[in-house]
Figure 1 (tube, rainbow, N blue to C red):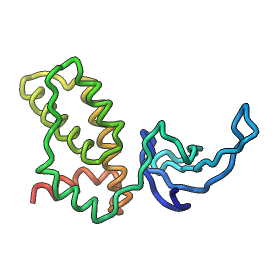
Figure 2 (cartoon, rainbow, N blue to C red; figure 1 turned 180 degrees about the horizontal axis):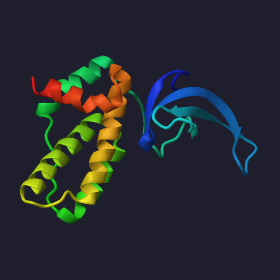
Figure 3 (cartoon, rainbow, N blue to C red; figure 1 turned 45 degrees about the horizontal axis):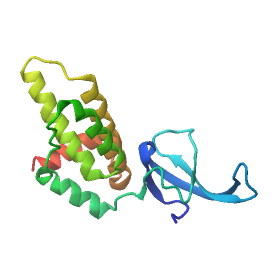
Length: 166
C-alpha cells in the first residue's frame, strides 16, 4: 500500500499525491472496499478514488531523484521504437504510453523527434497522431521528472536537452 502524502504515477492521470485511504460501500454488496483518494498534481481541482487493489490501471511509485538522474544520463543509450508496419504505429504508441514506464516514454519521444525531423526535412507535416503521442509522452515524462527533480515542468525539456548534450 502507498502512504498518505506519497507521490505515485496513476495511469494516464500522471503524477498524483495520495491524500488518504477511505472505505467506501461497493454497490450491490454489503461489503466496503478500501480506496485511495488521489489528487493529480497537474489537474488541479480533480480528485480520483481508486481501489487499493486495482489491477485495471497501472499504479507505481514515482522515480527517486537518483533513478531520475540515472535515466536522464542514459537517454543517449536508450534505443528508439522500431515500427515495421505503419498501420500498427498508433497501437504501438498507445501501448508505450500505457506502460507507465519512463524508459518507454523516452523511447517514444526519441522516436517521434526523429520522425518529426525527417518529415519536416522532406517538406511534409507532422502527422496529428505523432503530435498527439509526442505531447502525451512528454507530459508524462516531464511531469514525473519535474516533481522528482524540483524543476518546473515547462523547463524540463530544456533541462534534459542540456544534460544530454554534455
